[in-house]
Image: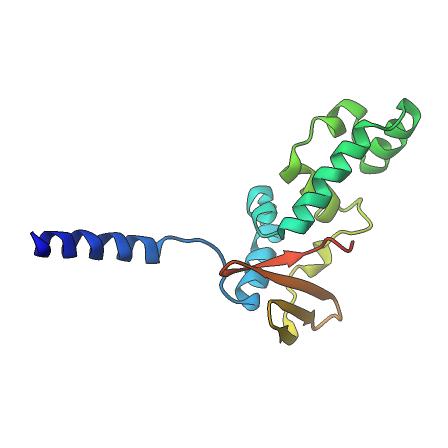
Length: 152
């Protein structure tokens, strides 16, 4: 009976240990971020974001909905969308619009082909500077590193 329990426990631990959960280093997080940007994979991009960044995106969506019609038209025009298209975006689509769109002031599209010049880790925070001088912040959430764009 113990042998069967040990075998089952071993299988569960191996399966749990092999399941992809997220990047465990800032460098892995940076590489996943680049991959999601370059492939325009909005879901992967959104999952690479810190919880604080996701919270700010949801707040932005709520604030858009509270604007008057003239303001909504102005914001939607700046992104090249109709008001209805803008207001229908979910959180991952909004994140992509804000950070991957060519029309955004906060666009990360310039990271295509970026290479890490410097990596600094301070406990659960990290900063990566690319060879082009772009600096990105990362935060450790549980065992995984997430890009923190909440200051943008």
